[in-house]
Image (tube, rainbow, N blue to C red; front, top):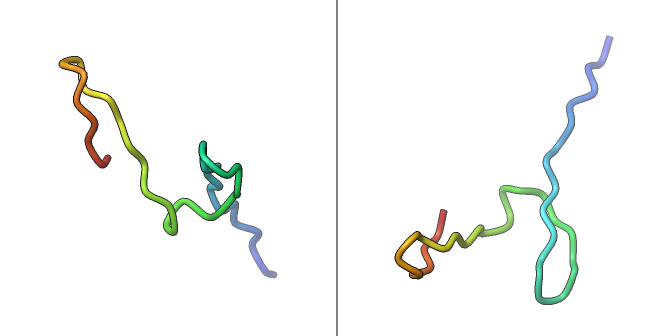
Length: 38
């Protein structure tokens, strides 16, 4: 039996393209107001 696995999808806030999580980079804003790659 083949198991269906869910692949997490992320959406680009600039162009609205959807891609698997592993192909995208996530940016976060720190409490100090700086942006970092998560």
